[in-house]
Image (cartoon, rainbow, N blue to C red; front, top):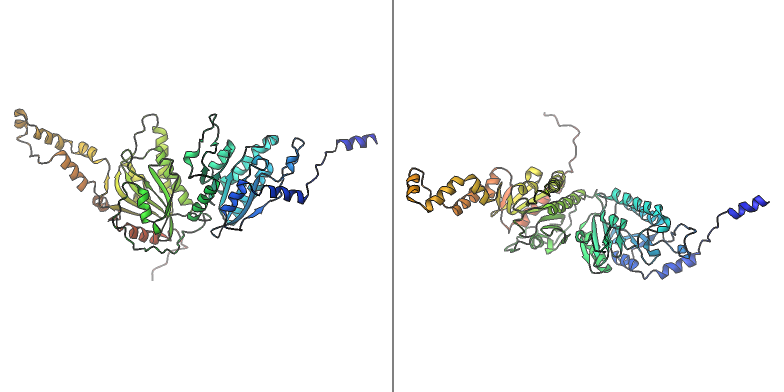
Length: 501
């Protein structure tokens, strides 16, 4: 009997499960939380359905009565412009939104459904961090979600909304998403004693508040397919396919030109604050959803630096994964001078850009607006790198070297003699009498180089450009190419050739 009593005293004490009434009361109390309001504004009216509503934390002897409240993450699905979208939102008003085993379980199960049904995921990050009472289980919880996010990468679009504290492992997790929207002033970094907004610069959008972040997410979703397996989207458009641009003065700002080309003058630029010299944007052209990139404005000779190469490579990689045709506008003086210390990493970044273009199987159309000098011509969507169609404006300049350098290198003897002819001395006159007459100066030589060796005509004669066009006819030309390429890759492998009769 004594042993029986001792065994009973060692039995674990079971915490009573709360009633449905109590749980509903706690849910009602949190309905006014910022995360719940954000999720409601993200979805079409009355379409959001929550999953795992009553999931609670694992009971522990270390936890207080707060453990009776539902988990600090809201998970569910709904419609955004009539399309299925899944979402999870960390609610800092419930258990501080802290990460634990059940928290991760809800998110992982949501991802399983999103992957199974081929629909995007929107994640709202607003958490105090890991639940310290769970120790290593909380750390493993982050790992399980990261693994699922990695599994979904390139299969379904993922958008992170950073509306509250997002530090440490949470910042790593949010940075794994395809796009991040950060609310101004929120901490978003892995480790920074100063508490600065470390990762904000690379954000897709910067929102004023949570509701603004939800609007940005809806805008992004409008340009994205639901899954990687979707074919190239072509929708009806009221904008004329044959509309010409007329006189467009975009003053070196590519975003103006893209808006003029896009259906109804609407496009959406992303990641503007990171390496603004390169513009990346989404737009509909002739009803076809496209990715657009190129030099935004005249920088230091329009040259490509390491950040520009990384930004362009990542954008091309995303477009290729989700069947978005890539339109590239080229106006670059070549590669930037990074100095001896940055050569290794710079070469790797440029190699990533080359890999992105060469490996992309989506339709690729390139337009050379201005300069295409040296390696910039090669890696920025040339036919040699796999571009399907390449256009150039009549004023484009295509050369292995900048014109000034090319003349100095290739025609140096003519330039030197010409300069001597300008300032002759008696001895020089005697020395130059037997030489052929020089009737050009340096500026004229450079103009001759542009006209004969660096013109788009020279490149077209070598088969590296398909057509030389005007700015006004650019939209009809682009749309014609996109329609022609819309079925790219559809044919597939043949069974066998057909024998002749």
